[in-house]
Length: 253
Image 1: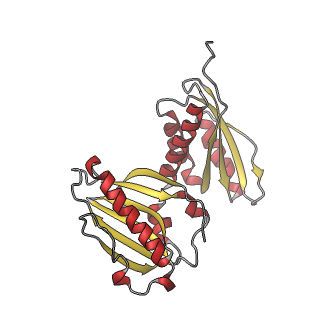
Image 2 (image 1 turned 120 degrees about the vertical axis):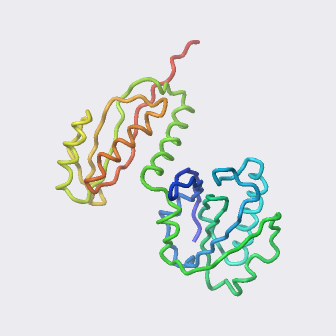
Image 3 (image 1 turned 90 degrees about the horizontal axis):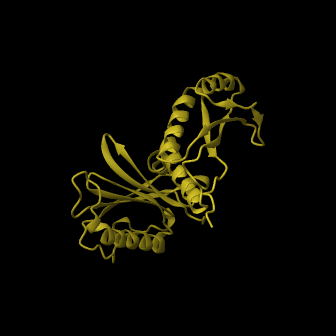
């Protein structure tokens, strides 16, 4: 199965240790894929990691070339699909999912690879539910929303938006249980949000819209999203993001 991949990056902590992730966000809508039920993990210790265990700028080009070579070789040999990586504690971990029927000899999977001086190791395991992808690689709700915020602000900036201008920002949350909506709405009102009447969408989930005036500059989008996620956490719902009208810079010509 082939889909248009959509990679993005985020930085987080694993047991108080910095960790840099790259992940194919689009795979979540397609996986798990029955034909890609074998997980291949490749371990690449960095040559000169930074003091915090992340990749040094001097190593970016070489490491990327080796990682590309790994993914291309695995795609050719066993139809592997690269879904992401994590760098932490001085090690790059590459994660691919492959067609197990095409893996004849695990020990020779990367034979012929130009390893660029890296000491590479790997393992192959059954993972038909893509647990490594969904439970480890994929960002948690806050990190996912921060990615969406950055993308949204880039689009606003491209359109010439005046990010410092206050405007009404619209939000939505999705509920399976109608009874959870009113206490969630009350909590939102206490924080200054205007709350709409819930509506039932085509997927039979309740959609609660809410709004508040906001600015979009200086990290405010990340701030109000964190506030909302913490506010809604007790109510067993899914925050569905935000939208706002463009306010373009005045034309001085």
